[in-house]
Image (cartoon, rainbow, N blue to C red; front, side, top):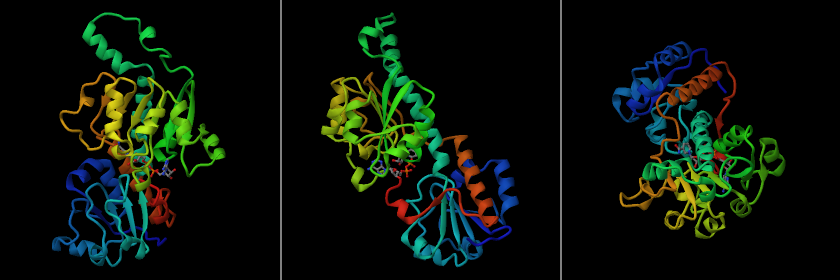
Length: 338
Ligand SMILES: NC(=O)c1ccc[n+]([C@@H]2O[C@H](COP(=O)([O-])OP(=O)(O)OC[C@H]3O[C@@H](n4cnc5c(N)ncnc54)[C@H](O)[C@@H]3O)[C@@H](O)[C@H]2O)c1
């Protein structure tokens, strides 16, 4: 990796995203680490106003809304060596032309994994305790009921949680679950039993995981082979009363099949993502007591964006010091990543 004392950096993302990512302290840090005009935020590589800055840029600091880095865009940046993404997936803006050019790439997906994992832990613990459903029933009846009778096996003691995908987020979820009295299963075609054990989970096949878990949480990436990985048959493997949590992508689950199960009351769900997203306004999932539906809020929002900005600035400092990125993105890994 080329080392420069203070590399020339340009921000490429939506203007509002840049404002939300970099607070005053981060802007000062950026100015110390790089030759940069933090007021210049490129959202169109063909805009002639940006041509002088792009002609000298060595590192693009990208964020949500960065335009595609295709061959034409790269032509405007003859000195570009690296792309540091201050968000998760780079699939929206990176193209093959970036790899052909030999760019080094880093992403803040690991920083973005934490809020999703935190949301998931909350969903697991509240799901095991049936908190959302009981709160809705309580608001309706305004009286105490025999919750033990209504929810056999109620609570979070010695329940089994199945994690689909030892992805960045899946691994974080497994790590954060360690202090609880829960058995953790994990299914991932790229994971071996020893690594799973090291993470604190037991490797199983997907079908076995579905049949054995009280709560299943989906953390696999959206790929051609993961579309409808939870189809009608697989959903049918879930135990009566099991909870399905999806913070990954809606396309991983057959929405029609899941809706049937939820309307029948056989399953419970916490869904941050759906297919389509959002669901049609007349979908029953908005109102079912056994469903908690949120509008894709598990990832970084508000102050959580600052964690991604810090991660990107750490990577910038590593680059300037001649070190390899801590969170590199490679074309091979992208084939099985979010
Ligand atoms: N709700 C949100 O706001 C939000 C935010 C960030 C990410 N996400 C989603 O969360 C999911 C996980 O993101 P990530 O960054 O942790 O993913 P990642 O890129 O780290 O996932 C890659 C890993 O997933 C595993 N995997 C690949 N194919 C699999 C399969 N068929 N079955 C099981 N595991 C498989 C492999 O271990 C692979 O290395 C993605 O779907 C992503 O889009 C959602």
